[in-house]
Length: 521
Image (cartoon, rainbow, N blue to C red; front, top):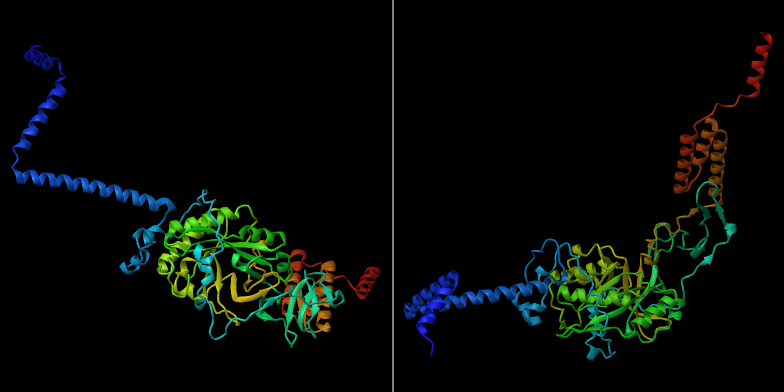
């Protein structure tokens, strides 16, 4: 057996001085710990537990904070009231509720490119938890003037005006037309006008056979007829739909189930409907029927809408459809506050915008005023549902108005929502200039006065004398059409400023006097 004392002595001599110092310090600490009273030991153990709990809690908060930041939020945090305890109970776990901290006044969200394999809906509304079939129409309808049931079976047309009845201006980009005896729908040089019984062009909203149209300040048709459809509309004959007078279609891309899980589903007829519409010259937009309860879920929904739309020429907006799931308001998103729902809508729209598409929002008239903060949504494309036979009294600007859910359209087997659009998204045109090349006069005599004034202006352009300028001014005064009169005056003044005046030509008598004076000399 080895000599233990010698071994210990050798080991001590060969050890690192720093390590030995630490070892001795640890032994002293252990001796002090053993010397503690029982009560002191209990307090020390409690302090250790508190420290450990603090570390764990901090880690949890960091993880949850990172989870919320998945939506990449930037800007100032909204400081409105938080959700109440009663509202928390509606959703179960607190994490399923959108809070004010999850969105900001300036939001930047990114589309999740992985959201491309969404489950296709079965078509069984109950199994899919598809709330669209159970819409709460009470928030959309006017009780005083309920919506009609228009039928689309052909494009709106008018009686063509013969070219002999139009006079082309030689100075202005206008055609002069005598409106006397005109009544009803008239096609003037490819633009549709509508005249009342007093031969005046109709302006503003006008229902014709219960279909809504809009005529601009020029009196020209400046609206488009549209529908919105989903798999609930069945198999659609898109060639017949186009022939029926439909200009655009907003097609459901998908929805989120109204149950607790909120499963994302792709509309089973989305691809079929988009391809059918585009192949027949119908402009297309899409909508997602939302049941999101957080901004992160809103970005998920936007990701589905964008990813499945990329391969198509989508010219209308991608819309966030927000409404109650049923009349009992029992869906997962039905008890959101207006602030929470607005946060979610903004998140969806910002994600769509960042993907290069035009974002929009669909809601009923009362939903916009009661369930959303419209001031935060006015920069997006607004599509409003208000079912009434009169012109909607929605107080905000909108581009699309869904005015009935009971339309009948050739090529669609059941009732269809019908819309009017005041903006041509396919051509990026607000249509306000349509009909601007036509000027209406009360009589042929008034047209002749305008043509005489044009001839006088052209004479001044050739000879540029004060006399001819004054004559042109006098002839313009006889023009009774205000817009044309103003434009002719502008044309004359522009010529004067550009050309000025030349000396007046001398008369024969003046020439004779000059010749006589020269002879006497």
